[in-house]
Amino acid sequence: MRIGIVNDMRAACEALRRVVNSLPDHEIAWTATDGVEAIAMAKRDRPDLILMDLIMPHLDGVQATRQIMGSAPCAILVVTATVSGNISLVYEAMGFGALDAVDTPMLGPAGEVSGAGALVEKIGMIAKLVGSTSESRKPARPAAGAAPPRLLVIGASTGGPKAISDLLLPLPREWNVATIIVQHVDVAFSQGLAKWLGDRTGRAVRVAEHGQQPLPGDVLLAGTNDHLVLSKSRVLEYCEEPKEVFFRPSVDVFFQSVAEFWPQAGTALLLTGMGKDGATGLLKLRSRGWHTIAQNESSSVVWSMPKAGIDLGAASEVLSIDQMARSITQRMG
Image (cartoon, rainbow, N blue to C red):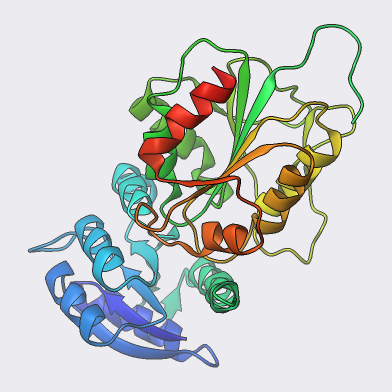
């Protein structure tokens, strides 16, 4: 991959340069010292990946991410001095399309780089994601007792946090629907993302627990680096398998388990994101009678995931985020 570096600190830039240069099949496309310069560089020479700092003069990493994803969209990884210390800005950047976040490696007095392991791992995962993005552009049994709630299931990746919050805000507060969200996000950020969504929507958004049964009114978020699945006994579980699926948690794995084991059809949404995760799962849900909605291109930060579902014939409707709440409420409200 060709990688752009955006950071106003000379030592941080050098540490990032050394990390990138140590990786086979990766090279530095350019280096920018603030958000304004990064936007101009991305328009002139769009890289495969940008390592984006958050705190910079002239224009910060959040606004730079927003403008780059609007004018020259590409994979963006937030690389900042302290992710935990800037968590609100991290989620804002993710809402505008950043894929993930990691602490900046440190350059030692002898020129050694420390703390690079997490960055190397993220770059490796994004390299696989970028590869799958190019491919995506090519043309049960009811339980005894109370009736289970209807399900609204949502899959999202790049740009998902903001899209999900905009979707949840106008939905009814009191209804016999359990909402379950699979967003591509590292386990380190899942609790924070649940809180961020809750703060923005006024809902009690919680990380799904292993063995939890979906109940009416629940808004649950997949919360580990394992896959979230619905079991035969209709409880939520986390599992390693299938190990070969590098999206963790995988929208496809979750949607397919729901199609297999949930006793009644609900509504499934495939929102903005890179790659094609969720397309085959959405198709399976549609084949089982679910109403399936893919986000339209104009309202998506990255249209790869919804487009993959549309291309498979998996979407009953193609709507903007603003239109989805009305469609969902008419069917489930």
